[in-house]
Image (cartoon, rainbow, N blue to C red):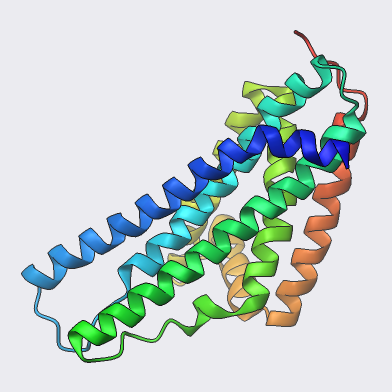
Length: 235
């Protein structure tokens, strides 16, 4: 319990920052939609842009969790807290903070839809996928574990890990989609790889994604423990 209290003292200010960023993303979405609604004709109802930008805000909050792991581990061990105490407190408080952010996002989204429906006299475009409880459980649990794993990699390997992760991100977000798109134009090794990954991700069922998420979460969790078990801290 002491470990949890100590971590809460550290992260309560971080939670406030995460909520502010979430609210800022929501306001940015509302601003963009306001500009679009004035400049672009709308024939098919209105779009809850604020709710979509809340997803971006939640993703940014995950980066905060990983960053707090990188900063907090060294400070905690330097201040004579054991690695076990830090990890226990950090995981629990991070999940609490992400749960608070997820609930705040749901509240803002419902507020947007209620006010927008009342003012505009019509229902927004369907975004029911935003309100699936399983997605938010996965966000809190899997997101915390994955963010901490990335934080542990950066803490352990420094800039090398950061640039490797950046390269992987750029490859997955830019190269793979282009490889999949050009698969029908030419049959090369790269396009076949892109086509395989595209088929895998688009045809995987919800149960399949659940298994992949569970296995990935467990691997990331135990990898984090191994990375930080004997990690030395330099004051």
